[in-house]
Image 1 (cartoon, rainbow, N blue to C red):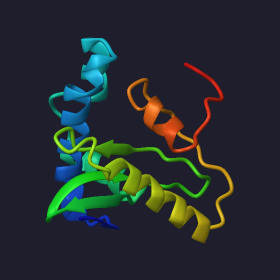
Image 2: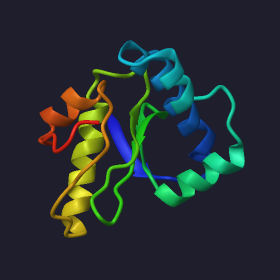
Image 3: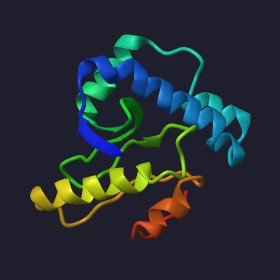
Image 4: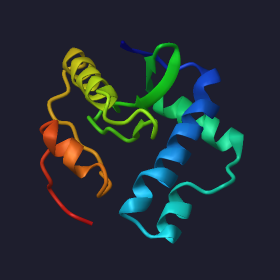
Length: 136
């Protein structure tokens, strides 16, 4: 069963690992090695990542006590980060996270959602109702 909870500071390193290994194992199919390394370098200052996560205040997906994904929803409707653990993809985690985003957005009276989506994630976002406004 997938549950979603609020972020706590102790999640930061786990979320970094999900971010890093998902890009390195999944996005590498659609992007050059240089792009992958720019998005997910082998080293990162823990304090920098901690501040980034504290600012995003993400929602954390759990499955059987394991952190399996995270996302956020900014006040203007931006979904800035959206990552599912590379070993848990295709199990409904992304759908559960996005439905949670929509639920929270409704409570916050957000009328429009948007994101800067990777080539890899585009089919998922389109399946969830997002439309391409501009390609990069």
